[in-house]
Length: 110
Length: 178
Image (cartoon, rainbow over all chains, first blue to last red):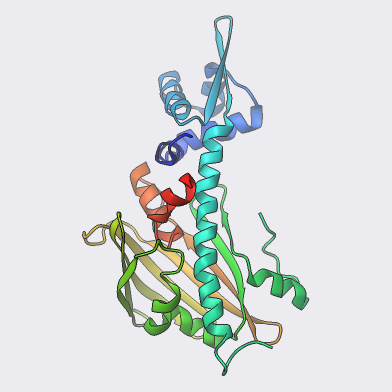
């Protein structure tokens, strides 16, 4: 499984999130298509794609001399799992809070 | 993700008592938690601001052996709060906050700085707003809105996100790797 640090660092940069959004909209894109759509220059896009690929957020498919980028589920799953883990923590905390306030004889709901 | 829109019937309210969902905004710079509690707003407000109450519920969800070493809260406008946990294998983490608005029992605004280790808080805070709305027969609908500072760099973003998002950041590794 891909490390969550890597994934969150990758998505912690606004231009990389923009590239992910573009890939989400377009399913598959070449670097030059991403350059046009993002307004970034080619070296920047390539650099960001490399970071995103290392975090398994994008996958690449070679076709002739073109490389087609698309979203990769592995990194997204890691990010999703990470955020979902906070649901668990908040649930535990708020369950405890609810237990505290709702067993208070003076103020519990009916 | 669940729809945060409140349904008025009690069965829905009751169902919501058992679940908390974090809704992250599309830009990743804010998130919202919605939850109902089985007591009126005044009681829930107190649970969020009274140190004796906080000591009971705030450490929940942290790994076994975790200890809440500091729990201070002065819920007046301009007042401070300071929570500190020591978590096995992860060390110390602290939440430093300033109450920027206190409207008991309806609303609480705060700026919060989260710190890993023993350093002092630095950088821009997260802005948090808690609202407590009476619903049903003595229930409270709480909405927690957290706005993260615009990230200057990924490290800041991650730290600030983690600050707001977790009671015990350290549990994240265990939780995702379990």
